[in-house]
Image (cartoon, rainbow, N blue to C red; front, side, top):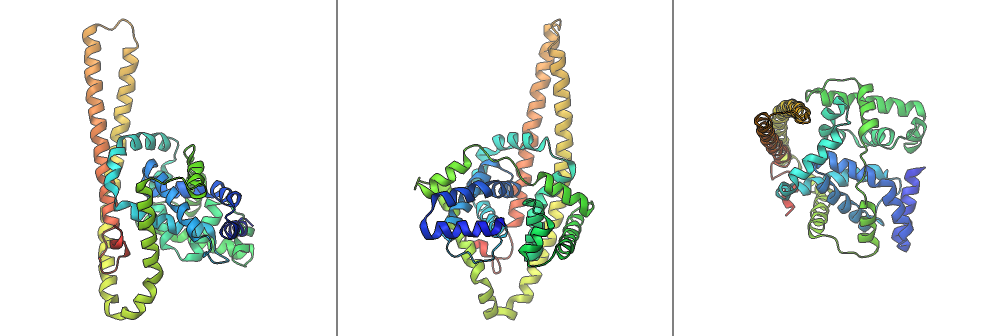
Length: 353
C-alpha cells in the first residue's frame, strides 16, 4: 500500500537520513502539495513557497509521525496551516500579482465550469469533514485509490468504503450548495478527480531536496513561513488540553463569535463570487474584441487613420484588463482577510508573526 510505503520511507529517512527515501517521497507527493497550496493562495509563486515549507516541516517531523497515519491527510492539514501563515505576509503577493494572474489565466483556460466554482471552496469544505471522511475523499479522488484500497486503509471492506465516500460527498455537495454552487455528488467527484492535481513547476522537486538534503539555504520568506506554520501546529496540538482547562467559561461566547464571523464570511464570499463572475464575463468580452481588432489589423489595406483608431482602442482595452486584475486582487485580499479574522481569543493564528 502506498501509505505504508510512505511511512516506511519516513522511518528510513528519520533513522538513517536516507536521501533516496526522501527524494522518493518528494517525487510522489509534490504534485499533491503544490496543487492544494495553489487552490488556497491562488498564486503560483506563493504556492511554491508553501510547498517547500511543507516538505521542510515534513523532514523535521519525520520521526514523530505516528504509525497508521494517512500521509495525504497529514499533508492536507499542514498545507492549510502554511497557507494561513502565508496570509499574514500576503502583502508580498502584490509584486507578483500581474505575473500570477497571467499564469492563472493560462491554467484556468482548460478547467471546466464546475471546477472553477468549487476549487476555491474545496479545501475549506474538506476541512469541515470528519477526519476519516476527509481521508476517504483524499484517498479516493486525489490519490485515485480503488474502493478496495480505501477500505483496506480503514480496516473495512469495499462496500463500507463506498458508503463512507458517498456520505462524505453528500456533505461536500451540501457545503457547496450553501455557498451558491449547485451540482450532484457524482459531478463533484468527477470534477475533483479530473482537476485537483496541477502540473508542478519545473525544478521545484529538485529545489526541495537540495534544501532539505544538501543543506542549501532556503530563502528568507520560506524560513519565516516554516516558523509561522510550526507555531500554528504547536498551538493546535495544545489547544485541546487548554480548552479543557478553561472549557465551558468561554465556549458559548467563542462559538457565537465564530458563527457570526462565518455568516459574515459566507455573505462576503457570495458577493465576491458574483463580482468575480462579472469580471470573467467582462474579460471574455474584452478578449473577443481584441481578437476582432487584431484580425482587422492583419489586413494590409487599412488606412493609417483607421489603424491608429484600432491601436487606441486596444490601449483602452488593456487599461480595462488592468483594472479588472486590480479588482480581482482586491477581492483576493477580502477573501484572505475574512478568513483570518476570527476572534483573537479563539484563533491560534494571531500568534504568527
